[in-house]
Image (cartoon, rainbow, N blue to C red; front, side, top):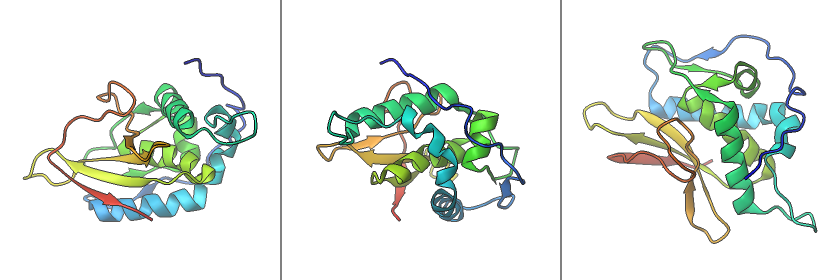
Length: 175
């Protein structure tokens, strides 16, 4: 799939600081901030929407193609980078775009801003890999045209569209 890019420089520069939750923010607190920030700041990325939305000749959104194109776009442009040790920092979508990186919650929020603007249903999934450590990762989930759940995780360990590394337990959050 060829990705054409339009308006990549039209997102205004970020202002202000990132949100630092706490030295040990819990997963529920982080997800609450994600939902709040998506609703509040998704419009920051509107100039990029043409790069991810796929429509047919009648102007109908093609869901499966849009989800794939969105995943490809995010994977190409936003690199994974850990937050500072023992801190949970949330960057605005605009800041993530300009700095070209974020951790899994920043990447999740960035991608979900597009789904929110396109009115595509989604949920946020938090997962754990070790029962003694609790939740360790977050990623977006949506559904294909036939109702099949599709994982939109694009951290480096996700080798292909719809993939995430195996996890032991999870919790889904819906708005």
